Image (tube, rainbow, N blue to C red; front, side, top):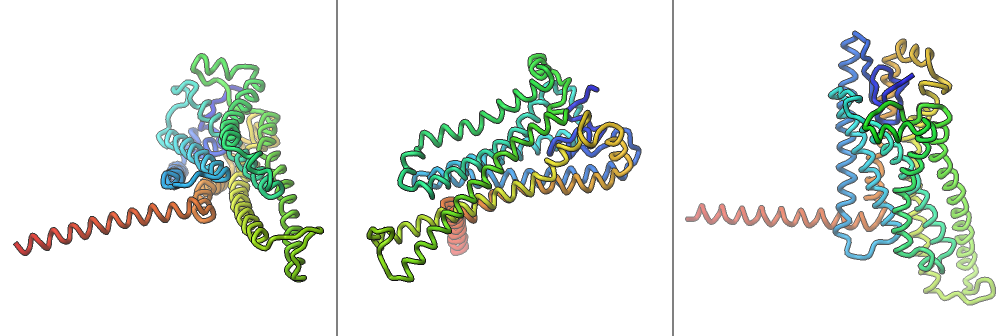
Length: 377
């Protein structure tokens, strides 16, 4: 069965995170109320998506006011914010096309490229979080070797890999799934196949999300165990009033510096865990729908899929609205977490706000003085 990525005739059949989850219109339905509700839902999602993109852009722009050299943690976090901007912009573009009911087949291979970029964005974000977890792991468990292991060049190389690798992997998976038809579509500027239309392909894609998450769980579990052990050692030292540990003297100033460094690392870990939690809550419902519903051999497919979509269309509409709002709220959550938790962005956001306020005050005072002088004369 030949389907289009942005086909709007079946809600579940064409589910792909935000694009297909927002295609609520059933072209064979005569229910005008349903279509009106659908258009309102798309408009709400579009506005929220654009706001999320703007907020992420503000976080990225705030980097311009940072005078000190950026830490590896901050560099990866900024790259993560850029990934959110790309995801929200692609989502907004899809919503815009869907709102104006643009025919996918008139756009050539463009729908397939949009879907590849958006699906890649999910993996790019998760890999950024995995990179942050490794950075925290090295910083806490290998503090003396951190500057040797984590250099500026290595961080830049890792960020480039985080962006390129998911796109390459998804293109390869999609090409293998449809026996090279996708590459032919790109060459001929056509759209004849759906990206990841089988259960095996979608399950393979989901492993790109779950495997890094499992690695992060093991990584942070090990980190928290090490932190707990270190804190217990410091408590024993403070209780005994001793300055010796493991048969060697411990300088009090050095101990204070170690405690401050560890406290900063713990705060960074909490920030990353908050971002990971927002990704998990925001993406998990969409990912479950993505795995279980497709056109061919998924657990829900064929006639069962059509019946579910036609008989419970308002329930489906409500579920998809909630699901999409969770995805977009995730885009909202990350920049808020950056601003509140990452000290460089927090301080520079305050500084930029203070500068803007000072400029406005100066302009207001000058205008007030000018008007007062004009009245005197």
